[in-house]
Length: 77
Figure 1 (cartoon, helix red, strand yellow):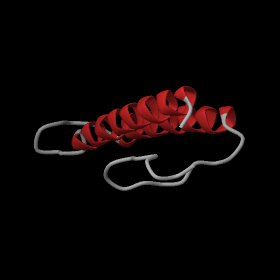
Figure 2: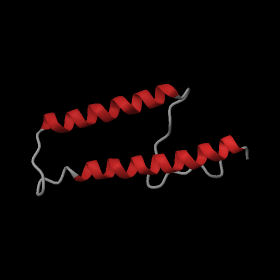
Figure 3: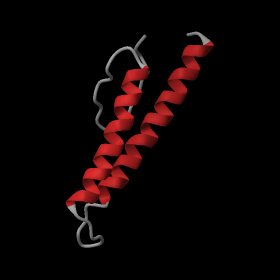
Figure 4: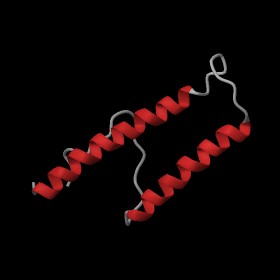
């Protein structure tokens, strides 16, 4: 595997797993026992995240695939 590929895999796995964790933490804000919010609040959150995901997809030439749990590029070329 080339050094560029190794670096891409290393950074992609780390960054995507961090993003997944942060999205899960944002989801925890939906706990009405701990937080107060309205539809406008969470719609703003959804729009901001959707906008960034669209921009990321635009930067790549093809749409990404969904993932549950841990993200990994290992084993695929």
